[in-house]
Amino acid sequence: MARYDRAITVFSPDGHLFQVEYALEAVRKGNAAVGVRGTDVIVLAVEKKSTPKLQDSRSVRKIVNLDDHIALACAGLKADARVLINRARIECQSYKLTIEDPVTVEYITRYIAGLQQKYTQSGGVRPFGLSTLIIGFDPHSGTPSLYQTDPSGTFSAWKANATGRNSNSIREFLEKNYKETSGQETVKLAIRALMEVVESGGKNIEVAVMTKEEGLRQLDEAEIDAIAAEIEAEKAAAEAARKGRTTTEGLRQPPT
Image (cartoon, rainbow, N blue to C red; front, top):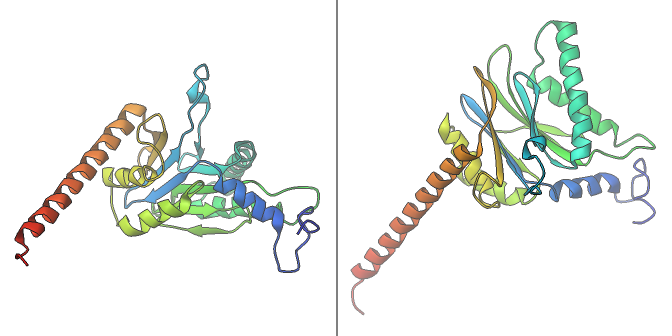
């Protein structure tokens, strides 16, 4: 393997590009990020690492706007993300100046994925060590969209998805619990999914909600804490009800 992981342009005999696989490993070690698409709202929720006491937490944002109607969250190397975000923002403005229409979510996703793919087959560069979740509303039809890209340059559309640390566990939770929702129910589903792997509370979770009318809005810690408390209360009530049913069934069993 050692002979084939030194250059991005060299395949191993069994068809691997090891530098791309190492970039995917960097994504798996990054913060968890969740995206959920509702009927009238799209939610991004991201795991937030604890910041040093003297650091201004407002300067560390993991959910950013690309345009008024498009936002992005990522998992992986934040320095790589900054470069990719700046390129995508420039492309959004260039598209608007050239076409005189806002960019579509699919177009900017294709652009970002194309840029990531370019860095997997050029000498002297390395892949971007990040995966992105891109959300937005179509400027013409108003349809909500959620896309994911990864370091290899592939992209796909989703109803709900996760990337980063423990993304498989979050994705399994979403597969079991996802249904078409709207408004606050979509926000609760995204936070519930992230709480599967992250301690609850506004200090550990960053959440942004996008609507067609208002664009992207970041929830403050108090709002996230209130939703997290509501979710915990629902879990406790469901557990109590389950225990009650188990006890009742045990009492009904005939003596042997």
